[in-house]
Structures are given as structure tokens and as C-alpha cells.
Length: 101
Image (cartoon, rainbow, N blue to C red; front, side):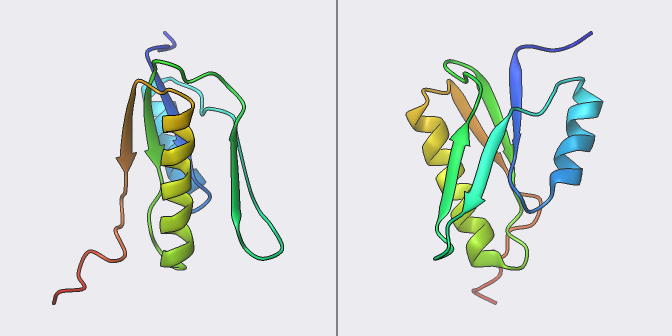
């Protein structure tokens, strides 16, 4: 049985984890184009409709933390602009989580 009530988007930091989750949940990973310009700016384009859908974004902020965190933020902004119903960021490793210690 293939689920159609949720979508999974993978950032570039850990595609393997996202693929394994998608296999367990029996969903396909949403088609997203993520590329970097010459000056390292990030471009994100979602190639499927996410309007009104529950979307889970899989993106840890491992090394290089700043670039992966920025990619996550741009992914979230793109989903919001594409009118996703509910957006959940799954961050298996949060690189800046222990700055106070």
C-alpha cells in the first residue's frame, strides 16, 4: 500500500536516511532540485505539487553546519511559498544545539 497523505523531502546532507524512511513508510521522495550557484548561494525548486500536503523535510545540520542549516531554511521557505499544508523539519543532528555548554 502506497501512502499519498504525506510527502518526504530530502536535503543534500543525508539522502540515504531520507530514502530509508521513505522505504519504511512506503512513500516516494518528492522530486526537488537543489543546486548551488558559483557564489555558494542555494537554489531550491520543488517539482511536484505540495499544496495542502503534510511535508516532512529530512535535513541534519552536520558539517558543514552553516550551509546545511541554510539549505534547510530555504527548503522550508520554498515549501511555505508553495502552500504546503503542514511542514515538519526532521533534524537528526542539530549542529548548533550545544552552543551554551
